[in-house]
Length: 218
Ligand code: GRF
Image (cartoon, rainbow, N blue to C red; front, side, top):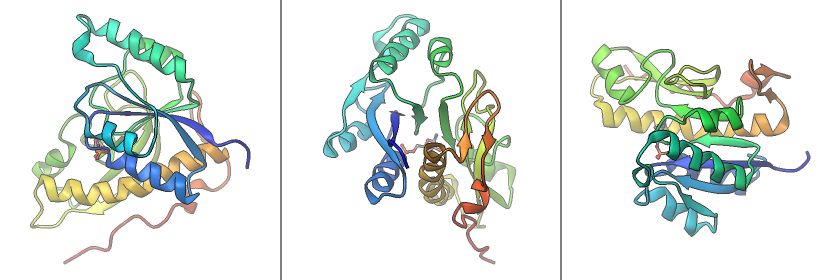
């Protein structure tokens, strides 16, 4: 199958998607190698998770830089040093800037807790609750200069239940994320998804996904 795909995973928070990637890589269901876990804050719990698994960690803290473009340049330089083939934003709570986008154009993916283009930006599960939709889910997409606007690679749907609040919905969405994100990375590694200005599917990637729509509960 060739060499595993070299990943840099960018994190800000808990790191449950990082955990899912680590698990899928070690289980052999995601043909990738995590060469770096990079956080924008020293307090990110995901850093501890990465260290527990012996992964190289780096912090490029936004608060260490007066101007945002300087932080973006530093992040681009750190990424260039670890030289990933794919950059995965897994709960990275900042927009990457032009320096990162220019160096890794079309090779950055993000996981978002909604069915884009619905509910981009912050607090997507709360947005879904407020809109009283019946179905939400998660999206893995290529990152461009907009807020959650890049080409969509894959989505998984989950139902909203009448008793849901943003936290219970987000927890259900995250279960879907933990299957979808490693599946997409694996598809990129295998060449089933070909990234570029316009990503294209070689083969039958969408139909190879596990069934990710939870049964409705009435
Ligand atoms: C995920 O729900 C992801 O969709 C969003 O941020 C959350 C990160 O969760 N972008 P975790 O840190 O991976 O647990």
